[in-house]
Length: 248
Image (cartoon, rainbow, N blue to C red; front, side):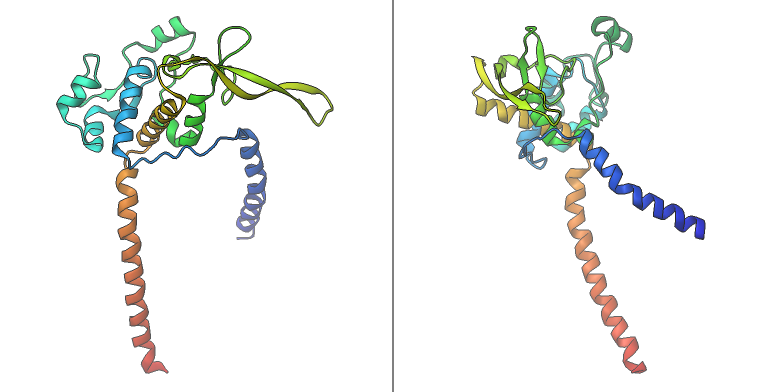
């Protein structure tokens, strides 16, 4: 027992340190996305954008087309005509057409499966990432949320091309460096900035949903569970009062 208590004490003592490491690793500031996974229309738009611009490289192999149709209020015909551009069947998972070997040969590495990205990263991070692509000094794409990302800005036609505006920042070591202060839209896209924000929000919502599809039902069930526990607690209190009445 003494050894168990010792190990528990060490584990609890290490928790603050673990929190510091997690904070340091995820120090990128991201604003609230305003994502609502209960907004079916937003999820439908996100599915459309994802299938057209992301699914060519990034599978979401934990999701099936028929489950998508059920959760998003779509018919089989709507899904097969608008969201399936391969020979995949309605009950199959949402996988990319190219093999891992082909992906490595063409891109240098296989693009990751994004099934759990919404759950791991969060909708706010995804929302910020999709809006943070810019043209760097090499003429290629870069991203402030995930610097030197291998992925190009596949939504540049909608967003347009934005260029960074720098400011100088002096670090704790006394050295001054240029850091990105904000972006300027140098080449407008097919969408206004407000429209593109909604597009990014819809994609982030869709990926958050695919990371845990059951959350659409879980939160509703949770309300009834809490109500049941409250009622059961009240009944248990009345039973306890009845038992102890004779004792007193």
